[in-house]
Length: 175
Image 1 (cartoon, rainbow, N blue to C red):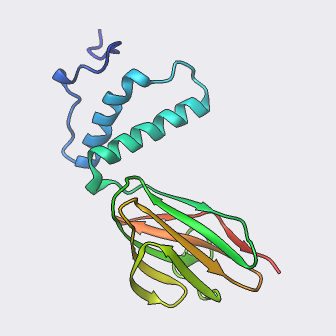
Image 2 (image 1 turned 135 degrees about the vertical axis):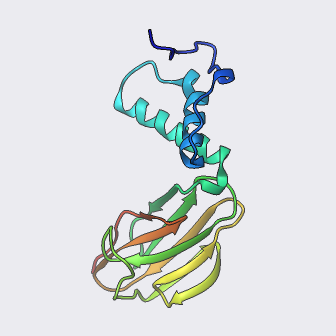
């Protein structure tokens, strides 16, 4: 008989979980154990996805120095401007490397927009004007940026944190 079972009144943390030698793995195991009481009773894809997101958020709160999750919300084009919100998984200051890319797997674009304005967040360094930046998020963990372009082009924001790169959905500028 398997020694693993479901604790109906919460995880039995007196026995584990097995702590891996890598903090990134151990923290996911601990967050999964803590999240077990709120596991969805239905097996719908959306419920399971929401539960997985909860585990990731909990793990990021337990080990913020290893949290890398970046969430980006790209707005619609309005008067040749597109606003993007960049959120870290935690409400803390973070150092982010940000650049405009032409696709969801590229480095820095060769085509610069007319302007890039960081509405929130501190620009620590402008590596390439209107293309690549080092940003410090405010204590909320949320940075906001507006890209202006009066032509026809598509970019994506690429944001790197702890060696992991996240790409936004498309910033579509149409004539």
